[in-house]
Length: 446
Image (tube, rainbow, N blue to C red; front, top):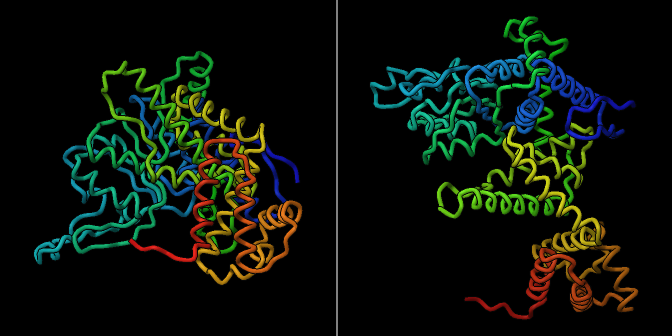
């Protein structure tokens, strides 16, 4: 199968195990990305964030001055799909939640119940576009939080599931309050869209305006919403037919990169403030950290793979950095490259894999102590079996005789490891404590 043109997600690798219909769906998504990038000039980074949001069933926030084409971009992306309803509104301070949830049922209101007629509202749409979202009042924004995150309308006694897939929010500015901070956390993908002043891009934009007069361009092919939903289910681990593989070591390494990037960002912010303490400290929320795993799977599947690799972590800037801010992208690249070099130039990544596989084995034994009667070689089909049993045969020369053998084997195996990084040293220490606890004769309470 031939390779297709890159879209910026990384090198294309066609995997034979991909079902043909899934491969066609991925091709359609890549073609749609390429078409939108041609239609909306010099916005590739923003386009990829919107499509990443679609693949992960998340939301995206676009910040830009008036007139740079935020609404055109959102409408052009939505126009690539069929079978999905779109809700669109321009926010204002006077609006109440019923603008988004549907008008209140007056008969129910007379009986003292808040009940929205949701037909035609954001609650029943798959896609949403909210222009000037920070013009909405805090009361309305607070009411939107549950719908954006849990995909449910919860108002009074009304509790309704929503098919809402992705909302694109647009704004000229960011208004800071306790509510808007929570709102920003619901928009996992963010981008700042600057006006183009490069003569070449200005010329290309003029060409597109003459051709389409600022309207959405008809795409040569569209994608059914069912295809998008299927890809999204696979990416988010909700598919019963296809499962993506994320190695434990890659997951752990990704969290190391997140932590290092957060630290670099905080240091840069502190230097920028010159120690005056002004401004909120940069934090990667637990929500973002958890959902970065979906972004990793989206990156892999768009490269026609069902397995996530360490190089995919290097592209997590798509979700961790604000598009259009080069400084953030550079900081993330520095965080990733320094850790990748540290873990791949030595055997640290191998140590990490072995210890995390051993952690999985210890978790199984903790859940079922009867497994201690079996040889380690019968407890797992992972690399731990070969690594530990081969090591035991070579170093200890002992045969399995029950739990005591397993205790000696695991304890000696951990003692033999000379950690290559601080993180691996911490993992080793915690595993040693867990092994000791498993084999302790008595458990002290209190």
